[in-house]
Image (cartoon, rainbow, N blue to C red):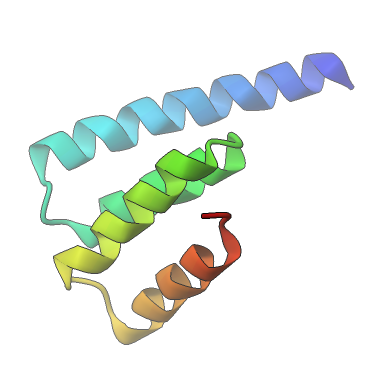
Length: 79
């Protein structure tokens, strides 16, 4: 229902705030960028999710499995 959706939206916004703080502090961490991308996508912010996943890939700090996950997310998101 609408109230539940608003509650989830608030959760995503808090997650996004935390991930933004983390990437400001440690911009070379692909994990933080990936988490930001997941949260942005969950909040229907696809363009920003794409940007975060791109940053995650560019850090070259992810395991091969997480790299594959990020690549898959980038393929799924609209351009």
